[in-house]
Structure formats: structure tokens, C-alpha cells
Image (cartoon, rainbow over all chains, first blue to last red; front, side):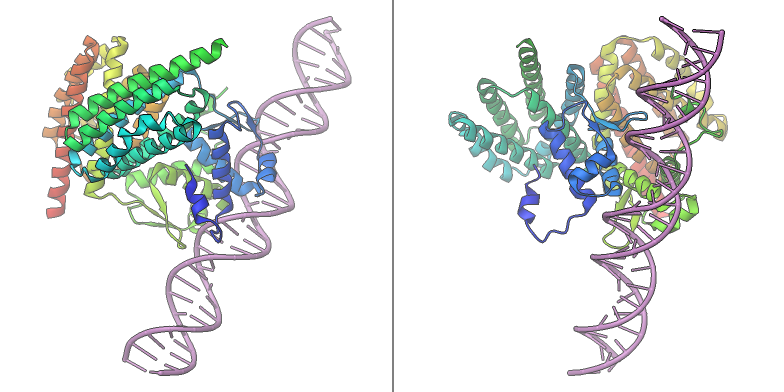
Length: 229
Length: 229
DNA sequence: CGAAGTTTCTCTGTATACAAAGAGTGCTTG
DNA sequence: CAAGCACTCTTTGTATACAGAGAAACTTCG
């Protein structure tokens, strides 16, 4: 996600508050800081190697992101993810992504999606290549999301989508998709892409609706399964 | 418990950062701090009567809200509102509100909307009573929004809606609606309310779609008019 | 007279010191 | 033995001091 940090490499004079924010955010998304984990200012500041002032700024941003909540007199803690909250997140996600693909299809600039189409056609083969293939498949989905964001050209909508994806990243961690689902998802994505290329907003919208419906079902089933073990 | 929030107004011991945030936010929404206005930390801190630390926290929240942007080395400034950004905001607003009323209609708890219905039936009369009536009409719309929020029962969606409404407040300032538009809007609202009461998600969604379409047209026309003068 | 380099000055970014508020604990008393 | 109260200790909230980066202005050279 934050590969830009790697590409910036050296010489990038990053503010301490930004460093703290990215590190904490990454650790929360990774599950390294589990839901319910307590965050104490001095403790975290020392660990990350910044003073309390930039750390507080970082925590403030995490609170705005909905990743952290302040406890009354006892510091902060990482928000937890209930099954209810997953369904709720998908209600928002559906509204945003349906609108996004609708707009993308309306813009009628199919070029970047043509390329993606070719990649998604061969996606099922990718999924036979084990972990590395799955990883590349996820990268493909990221590219699709980026292409939609670029086509939409709407900072408000894209901003809301980014917020949703932040929470999705945490959910994906605790409910890994199985290969069968991923294969089905590839087909669904292909349909969405074709609809955008064809400039058919309704079709793109409905295809996205169905895709997210299936996605939610799969996530909920995976969690159900995990909790039974 | 947290009753102090309710007692707000009197000697409520509010944190300095919270005071600064509310004051700045209010002034931006009021237009007192116009788009493009520069915010200098020391200057604003002295004016509001807090030190730089809580003021910085307040500004950070305003940046997260999208009301303020950081300039390279020269402080911060209030974001400006372009005509393009209004249309973009409405693209997001439509996605969110359509989803919200759809869910509200699905929940099938018509009680709070029954009361609102009665109020909206008499809304046109309100609009004949001059400024005070118009003010009460806007309060009515707030109540409707609150009722929808409560019915939706989705923190993610409601949170996104709140963000949109923040920006809408600024837009309303620079494009006051005329009485004719308000009267038409009352009718549109009534239709939405009826659809929610009837538990008809599709009708509620389409009615909202149309309402927002008309609302955007009206806003853009009002701005066009203003810029001609 | 103009342009570029340098200097200065302002403003942000960070660290730390201080104050105040809340929670937990232990003592005292009924 | 239990309940209430006070005290202490932890942890946040705020102020301020200091350092570094960037912009504006001035000076100097072509």
C-alpha cells in the first residue's frame, strides 16, 4: 500500500508526525496492533522514536480515520471489528463503488481499462501459481481500483473510497479469501471492466452490486468458519 | 458520564483544542474565514486564546475534514469552493443519501417519520412567514436528516454523510435558495418521507435522486446568477 | 536596469516541562 | 466486614522554548 515510501527511498525528509502516523497505521492494518490494544502516548512515542507532540498528531489522524478511539482517562485503543460493523462497512462500500463505476463508465475513456481487461482474463491462471500468484492478483485489483479512481476524477468520492479501503484491509486480514472465491471474483471484475469499456453505467453498477454482495457473503462465511475452529 | 456535552454552553470545561476546532470550523462554515484565507498558527492561537499546541491539533482536524489545506512553507489556508467541486460533492452526496434513504425505508420503523410528515405538510405555510419561517424550515430538514441517520443505524454511512453536510453548509452560504425552490423541495421531501413510511426502498431512492438533481441545478443556477451581478 | 545569490526573518515542526484530571488503591470508620 | 473517602499515581492536556526550513528582500554584479 505505502510502497511510495520505499520508492522515495533515502533523502526523503519525512516529518516525525508523518512517520509515526504511517507506522502506527501500518501496524494496525497488519494486525500487529490488534483491536483493543492500548496505546499509551509515552510508550508509543519512545518505541517509534519521536516525542509526544508528533505522536499525538498521528493518533489524532488515526482517530479521524476511525482506526483508534480515545478512552476516557486511560489512553487510546485500537478499534475492534465486529461482524455487524463489517456489514455496515459494506453498506457504505456498495454506495460508493456503485457510484464510482457508474461514473467511470460514463466518462468513456476505455483505454486504461482495455489493458486491465487483458490482465484480468489471465487472472485465473495466476491463481494456480500459489502464494506469489495470489499476491500479484491482489496487485491487479489495486490497479483496477486506481484506474477507477482516476476515471472518476472526484476527490470527494475517491477520498471516501480510500477511507473504506482502509477498513477493508483490516477485514481482509481476519478473513482470508479462498481460491475458489478469488476465481469467481475475477469473473465478476471482468464483467465490471467490460461494462466500463462499453460505457454502460447501469451494467457496471449492477455488476458491482452483485460483486460486493458475493464478496460480503464470502467474508462473513470465512469469519463464521474461523470462529468455529 | 458524558453529560457535559449536553450541558454545553455554560461553564462546560471544554478542552482548548476542542474550543479552537469548533470556533475555527464555525467561522469557516459561516464564511467569516473566507476561502483562501491564510491561517497562521501564532496569530490564530492568540486570537482564540489558546497556545499553539491545541491550535495545531484543531487545524489537523480541519485538514482531515477537508476545510483547510497546508501550504508548503507558508502556513495553512481555507480551501476554496469551485463550481466543479460542487458537482463533485453532489456526486458523492447522491451515492450516500440514496443509500441512506434506501436503508431507512428497509428498516420499517415509520414512527419518527410519521411525525415529520405532518410537519412537512405544513412546511409551505412556514415559508410564507419570512425569515423566521425559513429558519424553522431549515431546522425541519435537520430533523429529517437526523431521523434518517437514526434509522440507518450505520456509523460508517452516517459519518460519511456528516462530512458531506459540512461542505454543503459552506455551499448553501454562497448560494441561498429562493422561496420557490424551497417550496418545491418541501414537496420532494414529503415524497421521500412517504416512501420511507411505506417501506418502499426503490421509491425512496429514486425520489432522493430526483431531489438532489433539482437541488444541484438550483444551487448551480443561483451561483451563476450571483456571478453575473 | 535586471537578475541571481545571499542574507535575514518569519513561521512551522519538534521536544520537553508543567499542570490538571481521572482511576485505582488502601485506609478508616460505621 | 463493607462502604465511603481521601490520597497517590498514572496519563493526558497545555504551554513554551528551541531548531530548521522556506520565503521575501536586499545587495551586488553583469
